[in-house]
Length: 348
Image 1 (tube, rainbow, N blue to C red):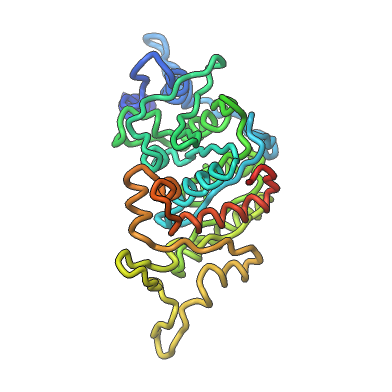
Image 2: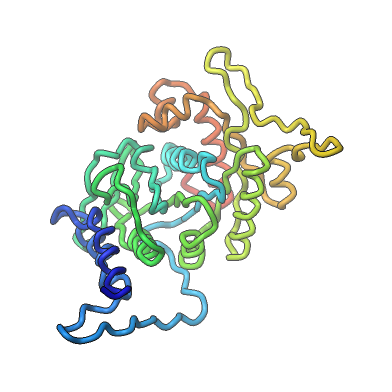
């Protein structure tokens, strides 16, 4: 068996869990993404006795691709973090819900192909596949008045891994960006893009192909997270995208019993080598000042935020139901600042 045949066989086997499992909704999307021959640029199987042809290499496109708006969406912002585990998706969902609660027709698009979180955060893990519009586009699922679309809605099961290489990931991303019908029942005022961690293919593709109103960078107070946040800011600046500001997540720990605040990631000092070296100059706020961008605010490290996320009822919704605004006020404050920055006149 030739190396090309082995590659084709391995790819076909790896894709089997993701082939369409029904004739409804996402058949078109998953069929086009997961076709191991047509979508991978691999040669078709030759006639018996004929040699395998050399794989063709597509010609590179000259210059950067043309940026375009996502249909039926007035404003688009990206929520990004170059470091994983800083609570970016939780913040993105609560921001989107804050916009929605203030009269903004809002949707959220989960662009993390490998690790989609939006279905869990919105309590839609068992919602089933999205339906198709009369234009054969995916119809967003709705939870708490928020439209959403995610690769997680298209997988056979919640624990199914997406074991894809770069080309297939990019094709899936293109489908999610441009083949979702956000117009039903009314077009969106704002679409929030929840980006995956890092500064790789997904971020570059979105930054080069989609007209963004700006990006919100999420970090935690530690130096190791802030260093990656700086890289994220640099990436967006290189692509000519406005950085709306920096959010410091998990800034303080709020005791669930006495409600006292403790700075878990204290920036006091650290004994290093032969001398005393201060750890940073004030966390994300100082870093934002050094970068010349706005500091959008803090969000505390509260066990309730984590519990709300795991339960599928984000904090903005959970506290609305209880009549309290202990943590949702932080998200609403950040959302209001972003609304003013991008000229979102429908904020009420």
